[in-house]
Length: 490
Length: 95
Image (cartoon, rainbow over all chains, first blue to last red; front, side, top):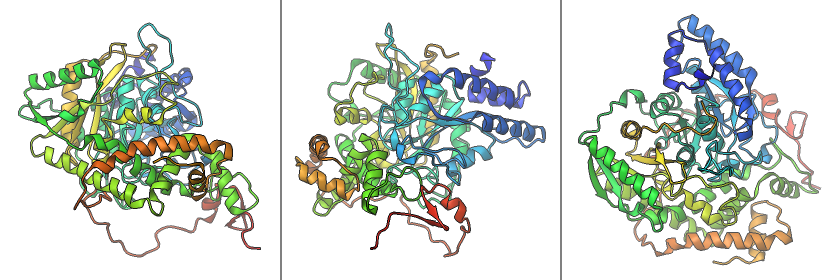
């Protein structure tokens, strides 16, 4: 059965269609893998019975000739997506016992297309984190190890459970969400592919909100092709999300032509940051060489406001979070901690229900939105955000896609960078600018660092041009021949 | 900007998060670090720059003002920590 786990999503799809095995057989193999992989703590909730029911129903649909694009493929869902009748926690104590009475649009789209749910994945609490160490349900372990070391490493975050599960072959693919890098950074740390589409491509309806002007769902998968297949099912106009964009969803897989001749690839000079490790610089140069060899044209570009992206993000995102998380008051769902008055009940519930990082961000957000500080912090950040977005618009007059590193380092150990919030925030230095501008961006595994851990390269595209992002990413994937696997994965 | 304990206590109350006195100094220190980090934005010239409120370059859509959901009070209340006679129940607010 282990050979089933070795198949990519595209291969499993084709062989299911060819009748070589059933969805029930494939799903059973993954349920065993999920159980064997529990030491990674990648799942918050396993749903084996639901998975088998969905797999049986899928095999039945296939017999009737009604197979969808993801028919019978077992995947896992970040625990930020509401799933009807299945515990949904956002990895927070404050959502104790919450079983949504509805299904998020993105997951509903996946089930519509035939996918099978294995369970709900661990993450940073309310998607706030870059190491998956803020979860109420405990840290997720990266399946990778440094050369000659057994130290437990972080999978990145916030979609750390998604990245760890896909890398360790506990699921064919997984959903993630990205607010400032939460798909791309863990994808890079775990050696998998992950794409955040253009803001507005995937409906946010039923996804627990962190920062609404930034949150976007996207797929995390073993290959660029797998991500392209899954992305198509996740996207689509949804009247229930006021920022959902009504544009046709392309066949992303068809964009993987391997032909990048004449394409202009921009290299932003501001991403060459002080103290950038040589291994990151080397990988980036290698990416340039691969694309040149494939016939692309390399263009030097400038994104002058890059250094202000992180401080902008750490005003805008907490401000939106403080507003979005006001709903957790112990009245309608989740945890309630009693108090003598209504306000004391709110304060006790939120003190016990939220973890330290979430409280920190709510309080920063509350402060920058408060009377007397709004203009100096929040309004200023919104203006700088305009300038950051304008940088990209100007750059795309000279290039078609941008190539950059995904992360400034490989995965670090659990416990590192935890004393200083700013050190942790710097993980997202290369991913946050595209988030602020709402652009599609992808991390593709491109090599390993000196410590033997995976590293990704990032492609950032024009709005709604995921096709170019995916096409270029696949060319890098082919050239990199990234075949390394974490210990234990088959 | 360096926040003092009194300011942190005020923010905590505005955010409806109980923050015991003994935790206020540590929180003040962490929040001050983050604020000093974000304050570098002051050096950016934003004269005549419009604030960005949405990345989606579109106007919000209109829809008919029609009821398209509802009639499911038991589903709505199913997750409530306390529900009484079809309502959410909270500690007494009016004497």
